[in-house]
Length: 276
View 1: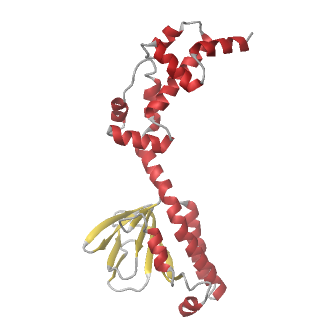
View 2: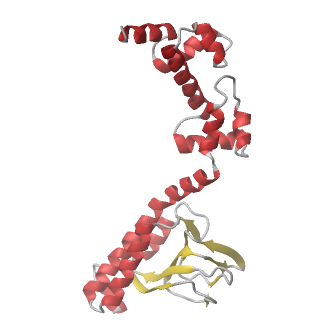
View 3: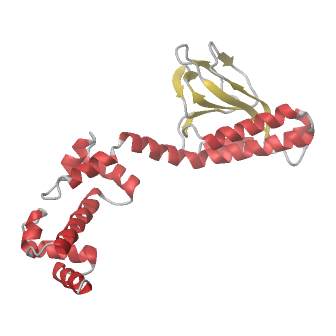
């Protein structure tokens, strides 16, 4: 069947040679010095490790391990937390191009994409196709499912990165700190310190998660509070400005107009006329 897949136009570019699922594979170990196919391992539970060029690397749940043909390697499951892995040996005229595509933004053999239910389902479909029948149509379907898996992985990489960042970067804590300090100035150093980051990395992480800067968001919170105070009270603009940490009411008015498009006085008049 492998020879037929290699010569059939629909599968010659990319096809699976062997695949499987090992659940909590205790004492699972493998050493491959010579091999003529590519290997993809997707760890969905537990952990393990692999060795290339005498360097050992860890594999955890959510990692894709991609080992191109011709690279001697060894891998093994953890004794304490044995891994559950999907694995596929694959080849084809275009298989190396798929490897290059997957490694285009990688400098290692590991691609972290998280444990994705849809990708797991696609692996199951591929395995079912190969196990349900030995006829060519089933293998053609499996080959196309393999292509779908390989092209899905790069789409998941940035999502996993954002999720990891969100897990480490407590946005709720930062926003709570902003809300509790609307009455005063709050510098970037204090915000960055709350999540144990440098100012540079703090701004970078915040912007990646929110598409704005922390200072811009803090200013919008202040102006939002200013609008509320203008709506419910007759406090002078100068007092509202001072209550929000702006000692210069003219500067406050300029910031307000930049955000709202009108001055605080115009906003108050407009809101008052609305309720008349």
